Image 1 (cartoon, one colour):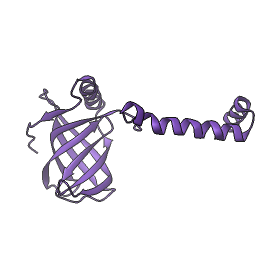
Image 2 (cartoon, one colour):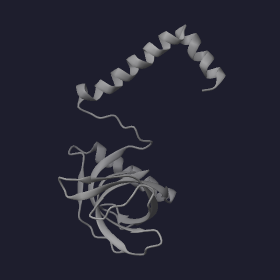
Image 3 (tube, one colour):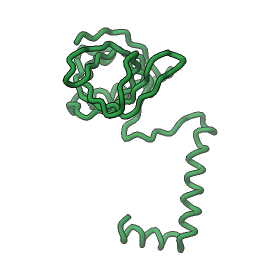
Length: 163
Protein backbone atom coordinates (compact mmCIF):
# COMPACT_ATOMS: atom_id res chain seq x y z
CA UNK A 1 0.00 0.00 0.00
CA UNK A 2 1.35 3.42 -0.87
CA UNK A 3 2.22 5.91 1.87
CA UNK A 4 -0.29 8.39 0.49
CA UNK A 5 -3.10 5.83 0.60
CA UNK A 6 -2.13 4.72 4.11
CA UNK A 7 -2.15 8.35 5.27
CA UNK A 8 -5.60 8.91 3.78
CA UNK A 9 -6.92 5.78 5.48
CA UNK A 10 -5.47 6.90 8.84
CA UNK A 11 -7.08 10.32 8.40
CA UNK A 12 -10.44 8.74 7.65
CA UNK A 13 -10.43 6.38 10.61
CA UNK A 14 -8.31 8.10 13.22
CA UNK A 15 -6.23 5.04 14.10
CA UNK A 16 -5.25 1.54 13.08
CA UNK A 17 -7.69 -0.24 15.41
CA UNK A 18 -10.64 1.72 14.06
CA UNK A 19 -9.60 0.83 10.52
CA UNK A 20 -9.27 -2.83 11.46
CA UNK A 21 -12.74 -2.79 13.02
CA UNK A 22 -14.21 -1.14 9.92
CA UNK A 23 -12.56 -3.70 7.60
CA UNK A 24 -13.79 -6.60 9.75
CA UNK A 25 -17.30 -5.14 9.87
CA UNK A 26 -17.31 -4.66 6.10
CA UNK A 27 -16.03 -8.20 5.50
CA UNK A 28 -18.68 -9.69 7.78
CA UNK A 29 -21.46 -7.73 6.08
CA UNK A 30 -20.25 -8.87 2.64
CA UNK A 31 -19.83 -12.46 3.84
CA UNK A 32 -23.37 -12.72 5.22
CA UNK A 33 -25.03 -10.52 2.60
CA UNK A 34 -25.48 -13.43 0.17
CA UNK A 35 -27.18 -15.49 2.90
CA UNK A 36 -29.77 -12.76 3.41
CA UNK A 37 -30.38 -12.04 -0.27
CA UNK A 38 -29.85 -15.55 -1.66
CA UNK A 39 -27.34 -14.17 -4.15
CA UNK A 40 -23.63 -14.92 -4.17
CA UNK A 41 -21.25 -12.03 -4.79
CA UNK A 42 -19.12 -12.11 -7.93
CA UNK A 43 -15.42 -12.06 -7.04
CA UNK A 44 -14.28 -12.17 -10.64
CA UNK A 45 -13.27 -9.33 -12.90
CA UNK A 46 -16.21 -10.12 -15.21
CA UNK A 47 -19.53 -11.66 -14.23
CA UNK A 48 -20.15 -15.31 -15.05
CA UNK A 49 -23.36 -17.11 -15.91
CA UNK A 50 -24.44 -20.73 -15.66
CA UNK A 51 -24.63 -22.46 -19.01
CA UNK A 52 -24.68 -25.88 -20.63
CA UNK A 53 -22.86 -25.35 -23.91
CA UNK A 54 -20.77 -27.58 -26.16
CA UNK A 55 -17.07 -26.74 -26.23
CA UNK A 56 -14.16 -28.40 -27.98
CA UNK A 57 -10.69 -28.19 -26.49
CA UNK A 58 -7.22 -29.50 -27.18
CA UNK A 59 -4.09 -29.36 -25.09
CA UNK A 60 -1.58 -26.99 -26.71
CA UNK A 61 0.93 -29.09 -28.65
CA UNK A 62 -1.17 -32.27 -28.42
CA UNK A 63 -3.59 -31.74 -31.31
CA UNK A 64 -6.10 -34.23 -29.89
CA UNK A 65 -9.53 -32.64 -29.60
CA UNK A 66 -12.10 -33.39 -26.88
CA UNK A 67 -15.77 -32.38 -26.91
CA UNK A 68 -16.98 -31.32 -23.47
CA UNK A 69 -19.61 -29.16 -21.77
CA UNK A 70 -19.18 -25.67 -20.40
CA UNK A 71 -20.91 -25.23 -17.03
CA UNK A 72 -20.39 -21.50 -16.65
CA UNK A 73 -18.96 -18.74 -18.77
CA UNK A 74 -17.56 -15.23 -18.44
CA UNK A 75 -15.54 -12.91 -20.62
CA UNK A 76 -12.43 -13.94 -18.72
CA UNK A 77 -12.89 -17.70 -18.48
CA UNK A 78 -15.00 -20.82 -18.54
CA UNK A 79 -15.63 -23.86 -16.40
CA UNK A 80 -15.72 -27.12 -18.31
CA UNK A 81 -16.37 -30.72 -17.31
CA UNK A 82 -14.37 -33.57 -18.77
CA UNK A 83 -13.52 -37.22 -18.18
CA UNK A 84 -9.89 -36.20 -18.72
CA UNK A 85 -7.92 -34.75 -15.81
CA UNK A 86 -6.18 -31.49 -16.65
CA UNK A 87 -3.72 -30.23 -14.09
CA UNK A 88 -3.46 -26.58 -13.09
CA UNK A 89 -1.21 -24.73 -15.52
CA UNK A 90 -2.26 -26.85 -18.52
CA UNK A 91 -2.53 -24.66 -21.64
CA UNK A 92 -5.54 -25.44 -23.85
CA UNK A 93 -7.16 -24.11 -27.00
CA UNK A 94 -10.94 -23.75 -26.93
CA UNK A 95 -13.51 -23.54 -29.68
CA UNK A 96 -17.23 -22.96 -29.36
CA UNK A 97 -20.27 -21.10 -30.63
CA UNK A 98 -22.48 -18.94 -28.49
CA UNK A 99 -26.12 -20.05 -28.63
CA UNK A 100 -27.94 -18.23 -31.41
CA UNK A 101 -24.74 -17.25 -33.19
CA UNK A 102 -22.90 -18.63 -36.20
CA UNK A 103 -19.67 -17.04 -35.03
CA UNK A 104 -17.02 -19.51 -33.91
CA UNK A 105 -15.07 -18.37 -30.87
CA UNK A 106 -11.45 -19.50 -30.72
CA UNK A 107 -9.28 -18.75 -27.73
CA UNK A 108 -6.53 -20.06 -25.49
CA UNK A 109 -6.73 -20.63 -21.78
CA UNK A 110 -4.90 -21.97 -18.79
CA UNK A 111 -6.40 -24.41 -16.30
CA UNK A 112 -6.28 -22.64 -12.94
CA UNK A 113 -8.29 -25.12 -10.89
CA UNK A 114 -9.31 -28.74 -11.30
CA UNK A 115 -11.24 -31.17 -9.12
CA UNK A 116 -13.08 -34.48 -9.45
CA UNK A 117 -16.87 -34.25 -9.04
CA UNK A 118 -18.21 -37.48 -7.51
CA UNK A 119 -21.78 -36.60 -8.54
CA UNK A 120 -21.03 -36.38 -12.27
CA UNK A 121 -18.02 -38.73 -12.22
CA UNK A 122 -16.09 -36.12 -14.22
CA UNK A 123 -13.40 -33.53 -13.65
CA UNK A 124 -14.36 -29.90 -13.40
CA UNK A 125 -11.78 -27.40 -14.72
CA UNK A 126 -11.68 -23.66 -14.20
CA UNK A 127 -10.01 -22.11 -17.25
CA UNK A 128 -8.81 -18.50 -17.43
CA UNK A 129 -8.57 -17.10 -20.94
CA UNK A 130 -4.98 -16.16 -21.79
CA UNK A 131 -5.73 -15.09 -25.36
CA UNK A 132 -9.12 -14.11 -26.73
CA UNK A 133 -9.85 -11.59 -29.49
CA UNK A 134 -11.48 -8.49 -28.04
CA UNK A 135 -14.55 -8.85 -30.29
CA UNK A 136 -15.08 -12.43 -29.03
CA UNK A 137 -14.69 -11.33 -25.42
CA UNK A 138 -17.22 -8.55 -25.97
CA UNK A 139 -19.65 -11.04 -27.55
CA UNK A 140 -19.28 -13.35 -24.53
CA UNK A 141 -19.78 -10.48 -22.06
CA UNK A 142 -22.96 -9.39 -23.89
CA UNK A 143 -24.20 -12.99 -23.96
CA UNK A 144 -23.52 -13.44 -20.22
CA UNK A 145 -25.40 -10.21 -19.45
CA UNK A 146 -28.34 -11.46 -21.50
CA UNK A 147 -28.38 -14.72 -19.51
CA UNK A 148 -28.15 -12.92 -16.17
CA UNK A 149 -31.10 -10.69 -17.08
CA UNK A 150 -33.21 -13.70 -18.14
CA UNK A 151 -35.82 -14.96 -15.67
CA UNK A 152 -34.43 -18.53 -15.56
CA UNK A 153 -30.74 -17.34 -15.31
CA UNK A 154 -29.23 -20.12 -17.35
CA UNK A 155 -29.31 -21.62 -20.78
CA UNK A 156 -28.97 -24.95 -22.45
CA UNK A 157 -27.16 -25.21 -25.72
CA UNK A 158 -26.60 -28.49 -27.48
CA UNK A 159 -24.96 -27.03 -30.57
CA UNK A 160 -22.04 -29.12 -31.67
CA UNK A 161 -18.61 -27.80 -32.40
CA UNK A 162 -16.23 -29.51 -34.75
CA UNK A 163 -12.55 -28.98 -34.28
